[in-house]
Amino acid sequence: EAGVVQSPRYKIIEKKQPVAFWCNPISGHNTLYWYLQNLGQGPELLIRYENEEAVDDSQLPKDRFSAERLKGVDSTLKIQPAELGDSAVYLCASSLRTAVTGELFFGEGSRLTVL
Amino acid sequence: AQSVTQLDSQVPVFEEAPVELRCNYSSSVSVYLFWYVQYPNQGLQLLLKYLSGSTLVKGINGFEAEFNKSQTSFHLRKPSVHISDTAEYFCAVKDTNAGKSTFGDGTTLTVKP
Image 1 (cartoon, rainbow over the protein chains, first blue to last red):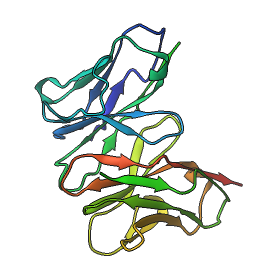
Image 2: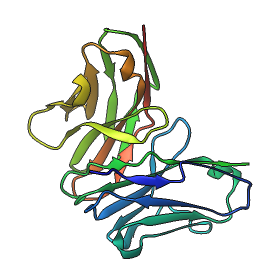
Image 3: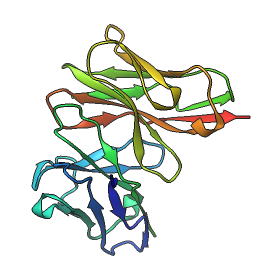
């Protein structure tokens, strides 16, 4: 069974430039998460999708961040414009019915460096 | 809302020694508890989880954890560590009726020869 796939693995951009990250969850997982992981810290939820609906985006900085999950499968997280403080690892995770076990399956992450 | 405190940011230990990584949590509702491991440049993967039943749960790679409701703790243990156990370990808590998992800041386990 294929795991959660993210791309790109690494991205270096200059501040004020846009950047996008893509995630393909495990087949059949209807719940998808984007987490932000700063150096030396645990993952922090940015947004959670149930199928194509964003059900928790309270921590997403909506002035510069946006996300979509077309057809309830793949998802894209965009930052425009990027700031120096956005340098971090962006993790995508997926799961089955969240209220049952809550176990998350993570991708390898996309490491963003903003210069 | 929930919160997770991992009491040790770094734990150095010699190979074949026992180790305990400590995790305390705070929640006003019933929770599920998890330990995840993150190897360098990789995503997180599940080590073990507590959903209900026996308070001692066993996971992969010889790890186990004990849920203590009165002390709101979920400490991770291994009786004899290997070099390959060197990684970042994250404790997480999830409301049984909600979708969000809250993670601690992690404990770096370094196993020395």
